[in-house]
Image (cartoon, rainbow, N blue to C red; front, top):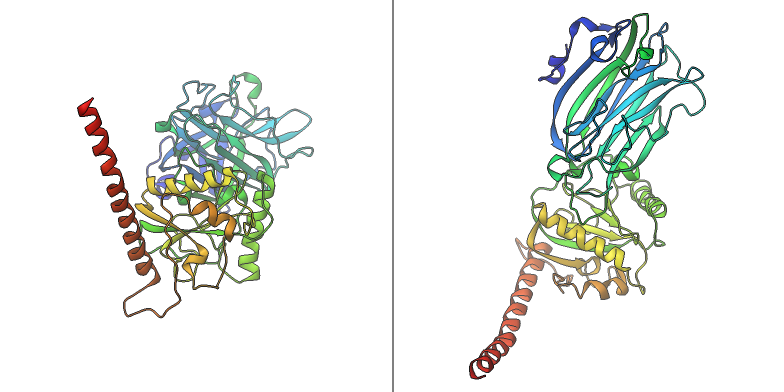
Length: 446
């Protein structure tokens, strides 16, 4: 049953699983806890730094809640700590779900192993669903889970769980401290009562039903650079694109910088609002398939994933498949982007190089330079004043003249920038060489 769907699976017991009315039914044996009374199965996932999954779950109409137990599908990071084995060495974590019965209320709660947890067992962060009502028998619940790895010792990972569209938990987290163990690598299926103590037991067999499992690796979020504070599409709540076109080749040679001409944002809440507003305008107002930029940067110092590293964008005519478009949130006609925004762009640029999406000898230009004179002033004189001082800034300007056969704006720009930088290197060498020679002569004669 399980192997036909997942391939390599360990721990599956067909004797406790069956298909009932099109759904998977798992039996929980009476007077038994953990794997002895339920089912725990694991399958390996391709290593990645972000995964999401969703599934439907229903408790039988005669189900005995007992004290509670583990329920559903879950994600494992690194060494996948469980069983009250606290990850004090920073090499593993897990995201699971429990049902729990206080005798006055039955609810779901997250059950998470992560570095820095207080213990003695999984962290629940005092979260519950429903917050005041109680879980119902014979009712389907739709569970959504999302986990994103952190980098190094940084609390820049993320965990998100929704039940029937209501947020159970949504916050940053430090899963691990060892980068070699930071990636998500395992899908688990855990359905059993307990806890270890007898009060978790039930004197009756129980049945839990599952359906509509979806597991998805978020490819654009596999990249993670320590220097970049990066918010992916899931975290900021992106709308789905109406279609996707991948870049035809990588690495690319250019970054094109824009500004949004909206009010600026200096905190996480307002920056997410701005990004959502820009996506809404691009999709609904302009009829585009998605937000136009590959990335956006706020003056809170964070980079927000637009179309990401692998998709063609809609930020600059004739450049959308050959350059990454980065938009600074705000209007920089006169004002300059603050240091946080500038640092975020530089970190994002470096991140693209480190990951192989961008060539080491890349160039930075602005939106106005990519188009004919007078077409746009984006990203404003304030931003241009900052960017023009960066070491990989190129002064190329689209002249608007008709292109010759087999000529593109990218090929013109690349030829111009290569010559400009070659000239700069030659000039610098010429100026420095006499200075070096002068110092050597002084050293020789002293």
